[in-house]
Amino acid sequence: MTAQLVKLQAAPDLVDQVYRALLHAISEGSLAPGARITQEDLAEKLAVSRQPVLQALRLLKKDGFVLDAPGRGVLVAPLDAELTLKVYQVRGALDALAARLAAQARFVIAPRLIDQGRKAARGRNIQAMIDADLAFHSAIYAASGNPLIEQSAQLHWAHLRRVMGAVLQSTGLRDAVWDEHEQIAAAIAAGNEKLAVELIDQHSQQAGQTLAARLSTVLKRTAGDTP
Image 1 (cartoon, rainbow, N blue to C red):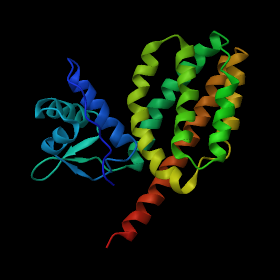
Image 2 (image 1 turned 30 degrees about the vertical axis):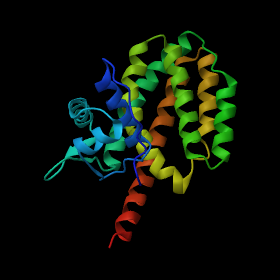
Image 3 (image 1 turned 120 degrees about the horizontal axis):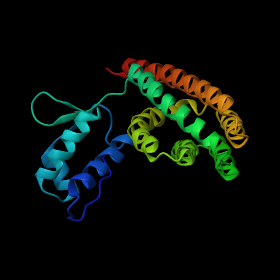
Image 4 (image 1 turned 90 degrees about the horizontal axis):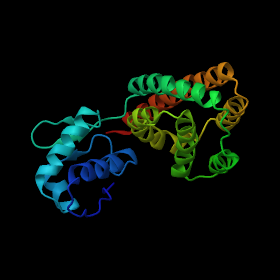
């Protein structure tokens, strides 16, 4: 698949722009797992010099999205079921903290987020499914009143978007996902901290185990199709 990268305008935060452009391409799959990328090619596609690309690639390597490659360039990191479970462990802890703080505030999550999620789950638009899921959890992060939670969760979500994009194409969402979201929202609105934390912890564990298992199946199938 050809990477869909657009030219960027020069700016003081050019390294950050390059980083975000590459992270988006990796997360949504146009820079596929295992793809070899070089500074020269990326600089040409983004219409920037090699220096901001080099710095952005260093950041992506630190965050686990690219790996050193033999010879020139780097490789987009492969998808990894074990890493997926570990990401969910950390994200689950952040979600539980956010749910507890949101319940203390008796925050009411907009019903439209759940309605949009159910609609996306019934459709075939994978990106809409992922965006709806992220929007629901982001609402809880915002409701917590602690901006560090969402900042910390963003990196983990970037990893999970890659996995969800690969898995949902063939499996779709778990049937119970939006029922669980609705129950979590109700517990938060009622101010029931204990129940909100229990529900979101169960939700995270189930989601992580299911996604990792499905990813393993997808990777085995892909390996079996490789000559």
